[in-house]
Image 1: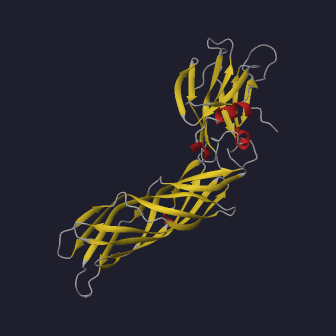
Image 2 (image 1 turned 60 degrees about the vertical axis):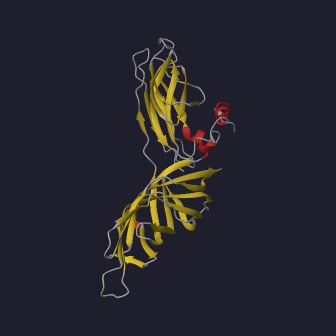
Image 3 (image 1 turned 90 degrees about the horizontal axis):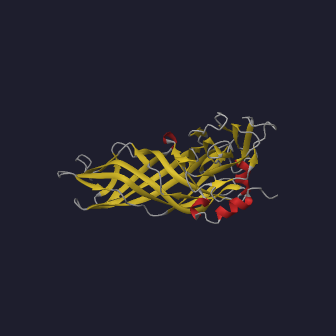
Length: 353
């Protein structure tokens, strides 16, 4: 079945950037369930916890998902966004071979945070995946204090681990995604001032989730020629796989007049046809509708209703993918208005897988 908006969307899809083929999500890391340990080796000897080598990750991690056909999560990648902080700060020591003597050195790593990257990987129907993950330090300072010497500090920002194969899961329950990703990787270490070299390894499992943000209205509608303020509303859940409608509706509009919804990927508040255009360019439009309402005379009984889930499922616009935030507004004819047009306020929503 051909969707009535197909010709218009195909025209804009040909100009769409490849980056619109995926939606980027921010995964919130569950600190209490993201437990890790570290180990270290140096030219002076092994590094042990002082008192502990346990830590957790807290913060966020970026995730992009790539739909294919009816599979909302056919593949994914890690785009090196977000910030996962090490909690608490790391404290270690290099024990003396003679246990009754002070440590050969103490090591402190403060304000350590990292991001994760991985090229595209396939996600199986059960959610399992294997990804080649690289961790990059966003911040952190390592301070080494050799016995009897002054401390020296090294900025760890920008240091990367070796790419390492990790097997995890990415699953969906309702409109929530759950990411479980083991991280077992090693960072080289070099402190030129003290001459100490070595490596630090981390091992554990990062657990986090992405929850569909709530949809909401914003911006200001234009009062029409009859003195009515159009009201925009919505119902349902925007989703790639949900077979039910996600309706963007307008009421209180002039009866028996043509209207359409236009949408884009950023908000705006720009003067437009004696009202406010609430969606930033580029914008894309749906098929026209008639507002209906009273058949005789003009009044404010007109309404519009646009099913965005049907548009998403049609897959004719590569920008409408899971994780994409969409901004939409309804435009209509208003012949008695100086601009001849009417404008509602706007709605923002995010497409769930």
